Image (tube, rainbow, N blue to C red; front, side, top):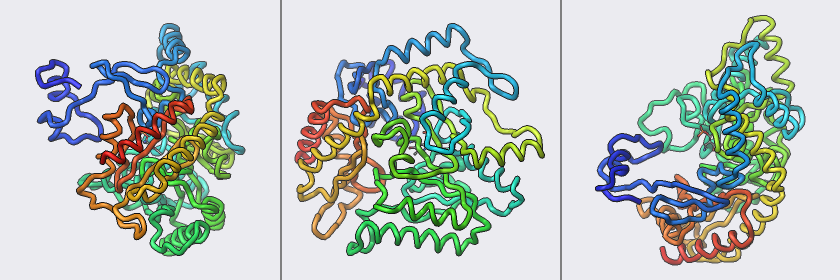
Length: 455
Ligand code: PMP
């Protein structure tokens, strides 16, 4: 951290508008930016030279870990050869073509094409437009609403901010609500009726979804979007049977399924895709983060053959599909992604996420599962959450003003480990790079236990 007299600190305070920031506190210097200047493996270093174990992989995105020379070299090579050419119409460059083949080879069954963007948000915008276009081509212009879930996170643009089911991202923006509906999150720990088991609760969620579909009219609903495991909303794995029940319902009402795999894609859950892990057969898949491990900004929509056939029909009837950004299929970002996917294979990171993830979660449960202020330790693959409660037996939550989750994350940071306080509840999220070792997992668990006790 730097102090007020520091020049960089002054520039930061006076000129950089940080994403998701408390603007007032930042501008007055009450919160100060920790400037990160280096990284290697699961560790990052700040400008003062302090090192931290990054147990959140940036924003759950640096899957391969920091400092991978192979990706840096691929970026440099592409930049020297050809930094940019577009992919509109009958132009293209080599790297995104190769990458599209690599993604389809790794994707769940039935996938056909990849549309490249630059952020998870823009990829979800693409998904919404494709779902609308799809229904127009099929002669169903009234089938346009999109259902998402409370606590889902799908982006921060006008439409995807609206899809996102977290108050923080809605407050005071007047986002359009009309085409977007929200249904219950499959949040077992917070189920209203605690006598329900996982399967019963999954059925209750699906019943609520069906009620919503029937109330709105199935002929008005284009798509359902969900993360295989809810991420930013609190790291919430689906209860047993949830996805198979949701899928049967969507099939019954001819509603497209969009799997938002921005976090779960490329190994996070111990399978290449979360859809394979939970046996989901989506029509469209959103990817970003782990696609390049965020060494360069890149996202994509993986389009199933079923949707692709309709897009082809539409284009034959209507002409060019008018949707594209200047930097869609950017060669430098695609080169980074190719090297990143190769590294994931070479380092066997998907199996490591499975094995070390199971180790981390069981060690966390052992260390904290019986703590009087821990309501639940949950997760899947290399994603874990610890949810804090005031009274464990009666499931009484802390008053939000106490900011217990944030206090624990701060206490953890003091001990040299970065976790993340998730919004809406006192939840500590952990999602380290997929190269995590058992020794590093032990450090995370020991430090978390100390941080919890300290708070
Ligand atoms: N979908 C999910 C599931 C995400 O977690 C995120 C980002 N946290 C997004 C979409 C949006 O991605 P981006 O921030 O790159 O726009």
